[in-house]
Image (cartoon, rainbow, N blue to C red; front, side, top):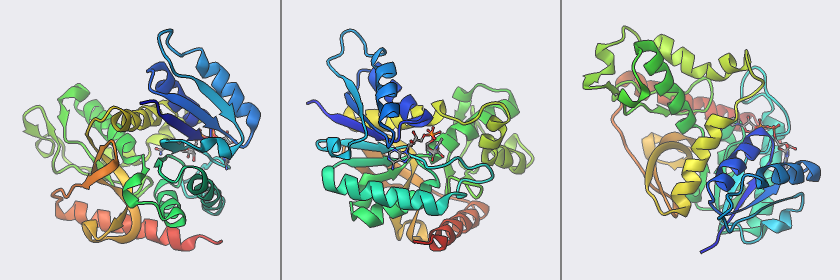
Amino acid sequence: MMCLISIVGTGRVGASIAFLCVSNGLDDVLLVNTTKEKAIGESLDVASAIPANSKFSIRGTDDYSELIGSDIVIIAASVGIYTKHRAENIDHQVAMIKNIAKKIKKYCPSAIVLLVSNPLDVLTYFFQKTTGFSRFKVIGIASSLDTSRFRYYISETLSVPQSSVSNALVLGEHGDSMVPIFSGVSVGDNPLFSMIDSRDTITDNVRNYWRTLRNFKSRSQFGIAKNVFDVVDAIRNKKEISIPASVVLDGEYDEHDVAMGIPVIINQNGVSEIQKIKLDDTESSSLKKSAEKIRSDIKSVHD
Ligand SMILES: NC(=O)c1ccc[n+]([C@@H]2O[C@H](COP(=O)([O-])OP(=O)(O)OC[C@H]3O[C@@H](n4cnc5c(N)ncnc54)[C@H](O)[C@@H]3O)[C@@H](O)[C@H]2O)c1
């Protein structure tokens, strides 16, 4: 069955996601951007990556009514660039997400929605509250990217290939309070804790990855694009994947009324299960603090 994947916000990240969907022949893709020229320009560029044997197409618009029929909507829109932390433009970003949420509810109320825009957990929360969509169909994608960065730093620190690192996971906020979960990680046959003295350096490096990257490049795009693509691919191709992602919580991990990164299983219907994993005391208390940080950001928003 043919599907429509729509991407709202077609800057660096949105266009990179579109490129992966189109070049892998996933589905028809619609790009929606407030600046019509940007949406059309990116669609023309990405259209050259459609494989010759593909039956799918891509188009760009500024007209939200074209979202009708979308099965998956990815939101990568942004009204500004943060420089110090991801919640810098929180009021503007929340106003933007509420506006987009109302349009998605109007034009494609059955879609599975993947959020990418920052501050990720706060926007996932407000999108779900504004639409009233099932919390299992509103998924913030970021902790899987943070997990890729965690795995990268473990591998760099120990000079081992990433393929030998198992069960790396980052939970909590997509922000400075994110919590790398060291206790379950193994490298080859050994627990990570038997190979490092402290978790502090790796934790700082993972939290500051975006700042390090910005010393050399204006903003990230490819890592998040691949992590989003993997989720779209799982939904479309009926695969089941286990990743950390941001979901509005209703008692899981003893948290209510907040969205944050927790381990989930995603299948063709969205989140099929929130997984409960064992954490050590340090991780549990850091995760609680991370939830509190997100909750306080949510409360700080001025309408
Ligand atoms: N989740 C993650 O791990 C992760 C990683 C990287 C970037 N991000 C976030 O993704 C977002 C996009 O980043 P980027 O570098 O592509 O930004 P960008 O500035 O290059 O692109 C944003 C685009 O959104 C458009 N836009 C603004 N408001 C819109 C609206 N209401 N409807 C449709 N389009 C709208 C802008 O015109 C622009 O083209 C940012 O919030 C960024 O912080 C998240």
